[in-house]
Image 1 (tube, each protein chain N blue to C red):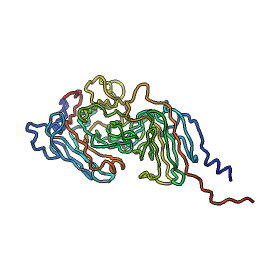
Image 2 (cartoon, helix red, strand yellow):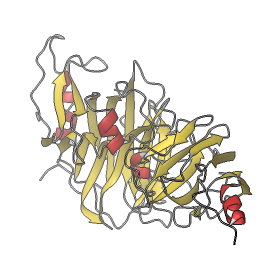
Image 3 (cartoon, each protein chain N blue to C red):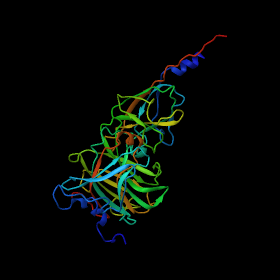
Image 4 (cartoon, each protein chain N blue to C red):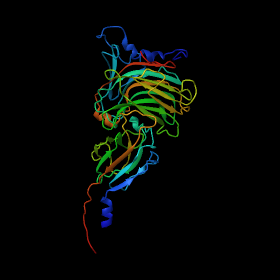
Length: 257
Length: 155
């Protein structure tokens, strides 16, 4: 069995990037990838660990797209979830190196994936980073698999500006639920709540409702860069996006570390 | 003949309703060869995924066929508004323009002569979504390249 149904945390996920914060000096050697992760994919991309990490940890994950290939990606994968119909995850991300990121340069930074897709869509929720037309601000894109009449390409979507944070590091948390439960009490529709640099559970930065009963639960998660647009691969190649402190759970709000 | 040429190069000022200008039912710009388009994004379609570059604010959607012998600069006015050009509503935009900027489609990587594209007027993605939705008036225009008269005869 992958995970004890009563466990609060999806154990290996917590041990993933958080595991980089093991005791030691700032010169501590970072663990080799994939480490506690289930696997890694870096075709046309690069994944390395580097020091220091964010928020007091020793190491972080550095991802970059290095080749102008449609399949270019650089992400780690956590296979410990097992059909999770409620899935929470949090991570830190720094995208400051993506200079003048604009609307033509979206890239996926996170996705929660089901082994039981519907309508050809297996990512029950995915997060992207992109800029505005002028390239003067960055936002977090939120796409949730849904069969709503308003869904486009199998997703309902919204966004949250990537503002605030500390020294370019943003804390992102999601709470995805299947079917009913978006309200946290088993009522209403499914969907996702997203917090960006916001650790108050009652006031998410964005809520996206989704009719998603046709999809299975979360069976894996991917953290890193993928689905980079052609313009991203051209303009933002070899620029590092860093991640740290990944944590995933079933039911408990993660909030402050 | 003359009338046709004049009609082709005259700048049209066309107020356009913001409704039903969606991914499913975009307003066709073809065969316009230039014009100014005004309207409001209020009541438009929200949450257009655009390959991850989500247009979260209410948006209006136009469709046009790219013709590299006609395409001219696109300009936009309207505080907080922006335009993106995409092959469809699920793919990442090829390019975009903010108010006061000028967009020349010629030379945009990936744009192909004779193909259909969407021109989406939305609001600055760097602004948070709000209730009621962030939306408002816009005006955008484009100019066709000058029509070259190849021959003329009076019979």
